Each structure stands twice: as structure tokens, then as C-alpha cells.
Image (cartoon, rainbow, N blue to C red; front, side):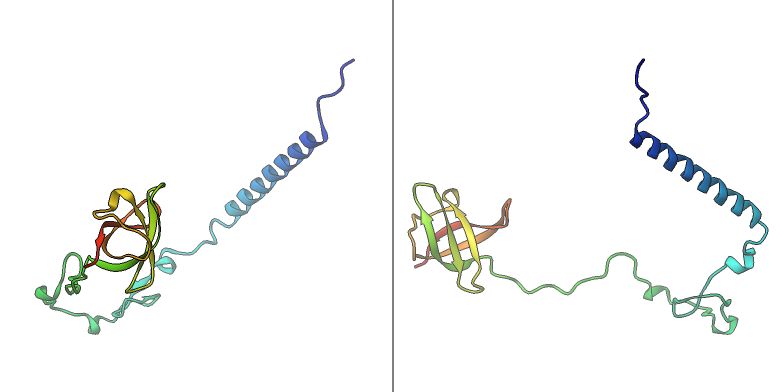
Length: 152
């Protein structure tokens, strides 16, 4: 004769499933029993006062603004003040450059950040400790130095 296929794990899962089903049925019965005890429509209404706060009391009609200045309504995004022009050209020093692999790093003199530079972003030939000017471009792993040329 074959051995029973019911294992301990299967029995436990079945017990949990039945327990969950009973809990759901109890909750359903409880909701049905308390159906008439719910809040009335008036108890569910919320109001917004003149300061934009949610309250349960209706607004005072004496504080109602009768006329609205149409010119004061702004539709769309808020206008920004023009940002100061940032010079795209940075000055720095070549910290490391490997000619055989074709990449290196440049340290910005202004903020001390190091930026990756690839051979394809070079205008002039560079070696370590050269002073250079460069521009920044967003790369896959961060900002990259491009248009790198020797500083004169």
C-alpha cells in the first residue's frame, strides 16, 4: 500500500487556511451586526476653514470673501528668479592618467572634486600634474570631464 501524501507542512497550511476563513467570516458577521450603528452623513462631513485647515464645524458666513481679485490668481508654475550664470569651464589638475588604458582623473581646483576623464574627451595630450581646463558632462556613473585641454 502507498503511504499517505499528507505531510506535516500540508496539514499546517490547511489549518492556517481554515483559520483565516473563519476569521473572515467573523469579521463579516460583525460588520453586518454593526451596520446600523455607523456614522450618519452629517457626522462624516468635513469642512475647510479660511486658513485651509480641516474642521468639523461649518464655515462662518460672515467671514466669507464676496469678491475675489481675478488678477491675484496665478495659474501655472511659480516664476523663478533667473539663476546666476555658472561658468561651464572648470580649471583643475590631472591627478592620474594612464595612457595605455586611456582614462584618468582630474581634480577640480574650485571644489576639490575628482572627475573621471576618458581619452575620447581630450582635446590636447595630457600627463599627470598638468593644469587643464575642462567642462562637465553627466556620465553613466557620475560627472565626467570632457573637452579637456591644457591650461595656458
